[in-house]
Length: 101
Ligand SMILES: [Zn+2]
Image (cartoon, rainbow, N blue to C red; front, side):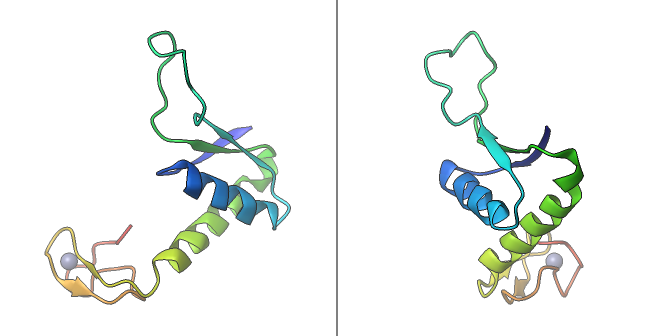
């Protein structure tokens, strides 16, 4: 088992889990139900998606990138480095080349 992706919330983690399952990649989400153990275990602030089979790792990574790009497609953004306006279909600033995540 290998840590694959740290999601921003449980909803995203579940979406990705279902998305990868549709490609027959089995994952588990850890860190979402850490209640009652505060102070004893290091608290995982965001759910982490783990891939069960090592051989699925590279494919799962690529699928997640694809998924996240689709999710953000169409939403205009401003470059965090130079502040330039970029259109949603671009994932790199046209002005300075900074990647948009
Ligand atoms: Zn820029």
